[in-house]
Amino acid sequence: MWFRVEPGRGVPIYVQLMEQIRRAVASGVLAPGEQLPSVRELALQLSINPNTVSRAYQELEHEGIIYTLRGRGTFVAASSHTLTDRERLRRLNEAVEKLFVEAYQLRCTPAEVLAAVKKKVAGMGGKDTQKEEIEHDDE
Amino acid sequence: MTMSEPAVLTRGLTKIFGGQPAVDGLDLEVPRGSVFALLGPNGAGKTTTIKLLLNLLQPTAGEIRVLGLDAAKDSVAVRRRVSYQAETQRFYPRVRVEELFCLCKSLYPRWNTERVTRYCRIFELPPYARVGELSKGKLTLLALVLAVGPEPELLLLDEPATGLDPLRRRQVLQLLVEEMAGGDRTIVISSHQLQDVERIADRVGFLLRGKLILSRPLEQLLGEEKKVRVLFPGSPPADLPGWPGVRRVAREGSHLLISLSGHLDEVLGRLNRYEDVAFEVLDQTLEDIFVEYAGGEEVTWKGGEND
Image (cartoon, rainbow over all chains, first blue to last red):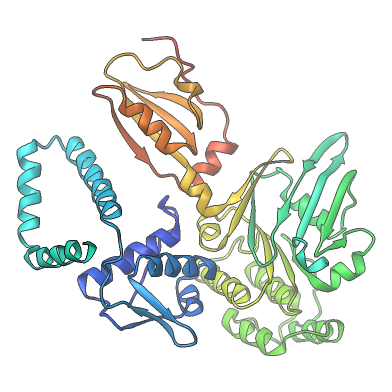
């Protein structure tokens, strides 16, 4: 797995790393059970502070996306259902806010924005069942 | 007792050169095992501060403790545990690289020959070359290898990558990451390479005219220093410059640009109370923040006028 961080983006590096690992897990580039590089390896590979890698791993572990076995390493978790609904919606809103700003600056009409969102969401089919499972789990 | 003390602790540290304070009442604290980046424009007092820590300069006033020791009284003990890479190198030009290493090995009980040899190979430092024949970049790298060789508890680096090409700069970063990993080594680094600093620093301190105007964990700094570009449909609230966290409000055409230091959620909450207000939050890089803090005054909107 090839990661890349960009200093000078205004986003803390641990956040950039978290974004990439989350995306890799969501898209299946990183499969459940797959081992992630050690903190030291990744720090050297990216030339970043080992504390930064630790921080990203800790937060992802807290989110249930990865898990650590003492002395064995860090692995991709089987499922990542641990976020609360509230947190999920907060992040979704954050993303929608970004979309809104972009659409506003592109002078898109509401219909154009909705059409684009619908088209993208239509491909999500499989995730719907997952969503229902989450709701079921919470009860 | 000394183990629990920070790697560097200064109180009211002041150095006056020719009537002018080069370092002015500095309260600096560097936690052990951290990487502390000392930033600031040229002449802000970074090099003077580092030299004071090493007792290469004596303070006009104030207290300095390094690794729990008094920098002046215990200067010999401090020098045994601290390494320093100066901004400019002075070596005897006729001495050979390998002879320097032999000398250092005899001086420092913990000299790590294996590591030094490996770094020399990476940096392509020719062991039999005379120091006077080395290029400026190679001299910088040699000084860095000499600084990490004794496995110091505290590493003071003054502009360690100045004048290096991107490959060498990356190799220097990798060396520093390696030195950081697995140990409680503390690094204080002064640098203008802010993207490199973003990669490795735990904490940054901004020096301006000899004063430490800011010292915060890097992630906190990037998380708190934001700009908000806002368009009020009517006239903006007159008390805007006094809102929590607002450092400055500048005019940008029809918009206002608010520089924030923390309190983002509260400010956004307040903005949301205005009908039809449009705003966007802008992230800032370390460089943006540097320029913001070090830079001169811009045209500032003080509130009140409505043109």
